[in-house]
Length: 96
Image 1 (cartoon, rainbow, N blue to C red):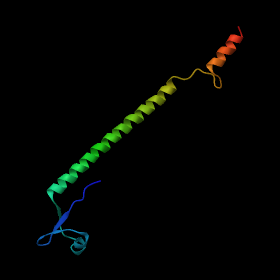
Image 2 (tube, rainbow, N blue to C red; image 1 turned 45 degrees about the vertical axis):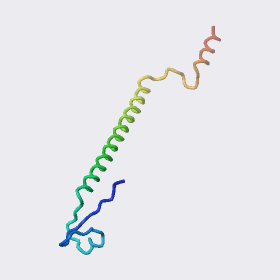
Image 3 (cartoon, rainbow, N blue to C red; image 1 turned 180 degrees about the horizontal axis):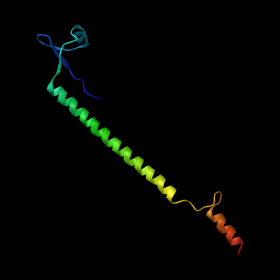
Image 4 (cartoon, helix red, strand yellow; image 1 turned 135 degrees about the horizontal axis):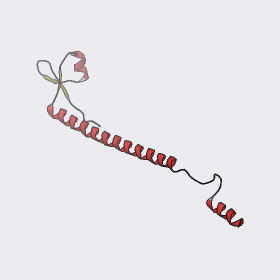
């Protein structure tokens, strides 16, 4: 969550630009302190880095999942549906 930033307006002197003042003076230029701006910009940048890292991780996991799916299609099973290897061996041994 981003930190709160105090906004100031200039009406022949500097005042805190609360919503009520903004209604009275809608064309008033609003300022923020440089320290507040820098702090919030740093928070935004840190959040963007976290978001980028999470997106990268999602992309990697998605690619890994798709590559595992494609391996299943490349190496088909040679089993007969509805049978097990043990059962086939048993049937083959009975025929000897």
